Image (cartoon, rainbow, N blue to C red):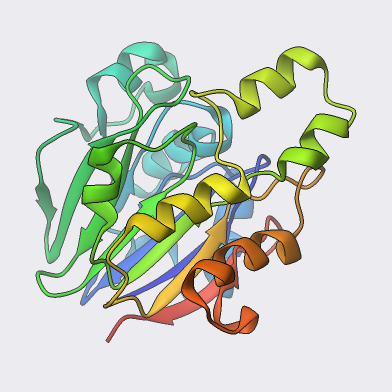
Amino acid sequence: MRFASLGSGSEGNALLIEVQQTRVLLDCGFGLQDSIARLAKLGISPEQLTGIVVTHEHGDHISGVAKLARKFNLNVWLTHGTLRACPKAFAHVAQLHEIDAHRVFAINDMQIQPYPVPHDAAEPVQYVLGDGARRLGVLTDVGCSTPHIEAMLSGCDALVLECNHDSDLLAHGDYPYSLKQRVSGRFGHLNNQQAAAILAKLDNSRLQHLVAAHLSHKNNSSELAVAALSSVLNCASDWIGVATQADGFGWREIV
């Protein structure tokens, strides 16, 4: 099992997970040609994809989903609330599958457990994906933690964790007050310390990979995010990865 990112941030998000011959994109917020080029950097063509799993309807996560699905005849999985919130965004996608936000499902060799999260979307979910023995937990686009989130992510072998902003940088930055309130609110995005607090509550005994994701270009830095997470694990800062907007991150193997 391995995973990689096409890019992560407010300008577009996509995570690629591979179990044997099953390759699933988690979200796709890039244009068609950009998505194809980003996949090529990872040595993957769109024809090799099994399908796309969607977290929620915000543009930086779905703007490329329908275009890619229609062009390459891909299956798309999403919650009823996400589809209801923007049916036009998924128009003419031939193979749409509505999922239960609490029920595990399988895509060929891959087991996928969705779980609901607090975010300002219609029915947002995040996912734990695995092969039956190893588990990758993903948590981005969430304003605060819940006991259910922590239960889902505990004991994972790899974790992609949102570190969207530094509270001080956001507070003193040039965002309008209303946007600052949205980003920092209970249905917004995790700051570095919130992410670290979640990490501290998890069973990390199996953790092989930790990647900070969805960093704000204006209100955070990789150094601040990594410092917050490494202080919890008491590990070297270079052990923690960072998903960038431009390049995401390369393949990481879960053994």
